[in-house]
Image (cartoon, rainbow, N blue to C red; front, side, top):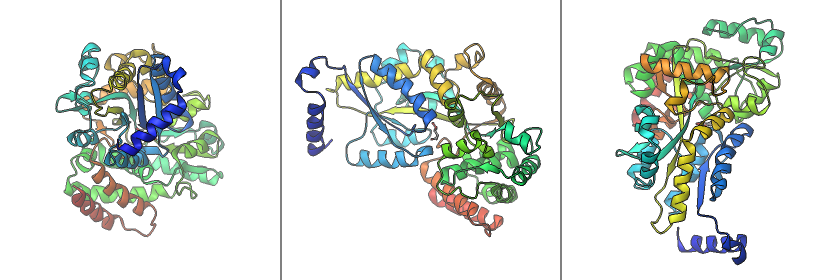
Amino acid sequence: MNAITRLATVISLATLFPLGAQAADPKGTVEVVHWWTSGGEKAAVDVLKAQVEKDGFIWKDGAVAGGGGSTAMTVLKSRAVSGNPPSVAQIKGPDIQEWGSLGLLSTDTLAPVAKAEKWDSLLSKKVSDTVKYEGEYVAVPVNIHRVNWLWINPEVFKKAGIDKAPTTLEEFYAAGDKLKAAGFIALAHGGQPWQDSTVFEDVVLSVMGADGYKKALVDLDQKTLTGPEMVKTLTELKKLATYMDANRAGRDWNVAAADVINGKAGMQMMGDWAKSEWTAAKKIAGKDYQCVPFPGTDKAFTYNIDSLAVFQLKAEKEGDIAAQQDLAKVALGENFQKVFSINKGSIPVRTDMLNDMEKLGFDACAQTAAKDFLADEKTGGLQPSMAHNMATTLAVQGAFFDVVTNYINDPKADPADTAKKLGAAVKSAQ
Ligand code: BGC
């Protein structure tokens, strides 16, 4: 924090807490940068805020609007560059290693909490490795999202004469044709790069299977990125895009979700944070809406783990460090894991809870997600989401985003040329 910012903080704190109020001083402050700003997401993060406040700490909310987190990441970077990072931020996947290597994350704040709460035994190794830097926890994982879902409004399907959820791409297109003919938006969608790439990775998974997905989006194998299966994927993606809402440009994911909830559209391809909107609208899984794996991807699970990383604070900021530790302890507690995920649409990250989902009160979608997560972990079907920062660096992800979004928005673009472009763009971002 530079001198001017420090001064400004002192001044604003002095205005907020005149001397009398400071007597009942809170134990410390935790500022959290995150991008949970839709109605359902806010309901979920409010659970964390309420508990941290109940424990006697001040929660300073650093919410940055913009699904998928690209804007939040830009804000975070510029704050870090100007020497004013928050104390906690939503950072995920391989990006955690990059922030760790800059020396900005604390490698000792979480150690006592992790030891006391036995995090190593609560988390699968895949998860704990992701949130550790050089063997030490630098972030606390809060939940697991599945990305490859298709959300369906059954009432709209009925009106369009469709009697079952599609299980293949052909059935998906057939359902799309019927929805269009009946005057509905077939596929609600927001035309933002991260949403386009969420759809793209579902199609990669459907066409190439989990092995091909891994080769293309995780191993970044040039042969797979530019080969015939990628050309086929892009050909299917072009067809699929014809079912998307024509007025999608720049639309937020939750606005697209609302189109399905309100009966304007039949389907949406989105991770299960979309369920947070259905839950906020008081709709019941299995009755008012259906969640099914995107056609052709039922044996796979693209995962997206939300985690909150802790920044290094000066040793004398004991109260604020205690606030970071409190937040981390709350986040992996059993009660929070349950209530947060029920609001957020996700499943707990604690392995001991994943086998007990029905008993814990989770709905049908969450029960399916937990069952599939455990099964797909054993078969190689469990793969990190590229569109949600779990598979690659942000630079490589940016290369995918550019090529995919340009392709979806240019009906004349050629699949074979685009596959070549994809290979070249990924190579130069590596
Ligand atoms: C995050 C979710 C969030 C979604 C939409 C994803 O990348 O992991 O927590 O709800 O973006 O903003």
